[in-house]
Amino acid sequence: FGLSVREMAAQWAVLALLAACMASAAKESVLNMCMDAKHHKTEPGPEEALHGQCVLWKDNACCTANTSTEAHQDQSYLYNFNWNHCGVMPEKCKQHFIQDTCLYECSPNLGPWIDQADTSWRRERILNVPLCKEDCELWWEDCQDAITCKENWHKGWNWTSGTNRCPRGFMCQPFKYVFPRPADLCEKIWSNSYKYTMEHRGSGRCIQMWFDPANGNPNVAVAKYYAQNGRDASPTPRAVLLLLLPAALLLWRGWYDGIA
Ligand SMILES: *[C@@H]1O[C@H](CO)[C@@H](O)[C@H](O)[C@H]1NC(C)=O
Ligand SMILES: *[C@@H]1O[C@H](CO)[C@@H](O)[C@H](O)[C@H]1NC(C)=O
Image (cartoon, rainbow, N blue to C red; front, side, top):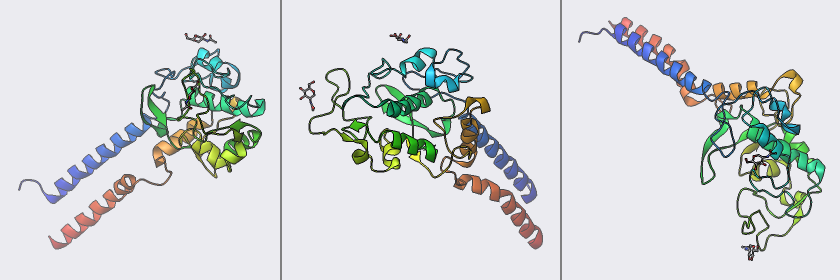
């Protein structure tokens, strides 16, 4: 046959190593990147002139200064989205929606959760980004006095006037009725872009919408963790297989040497 079992095992090991390297390179490539959506830059980079609440990302951002300014405006040119569709949204609530926009437009650390979108206005979206408990709960608490008519703000609006208005039959109600728990708000409002978690700010296991830029961007480490461990934070079957492969090889060689 030409090749001995030992040689075949060695070749197999080399192939497995190569596959592992390629898998790890693919995972690295989701770090420090911008999604392919409506206003994102193609590559992240420094932006000296970021505005207001988006300034946290000025060292490395996927948004331009223009996008960061627009993120603070009612019915901005970004999406023509009207926060005030059931009366004026209270300022303390609106700041969370601005921060949510800043994170979405500016963060270069959402790569592990980028998914295909297949809509007319963007090719990619984010799905199940694990949001820190505090970020979700504060957002929910500060919006208790806000009013809305819809649970999912991505679709179902009446856009005939050029901006989103409540469709017929949808009643304006306080947030606490539309979103009874913090998870309802964070998960349902943008069709599962975020996932509510029990992880705390600073744990390195959840994405922070708010952070102190003096200590660097904590989401860099979070993206790295989920890129390496799988976005569901449990070892993926493939990772387990790759770990077991060398052991299997040794066992097989031992068994073969034993009978030979
Ligand atoms: C941002 O750019 C858009 C499109 O070019 C423009 O209409 C808008 O006025 C700009 N906004 C700011 C704040 O400069
Ligand atoms: C949408 O709004 C327009 C007025 O701007 C109204 O005539 C129409 O009936 C609305 N449609 C729905 C489905 O709410």
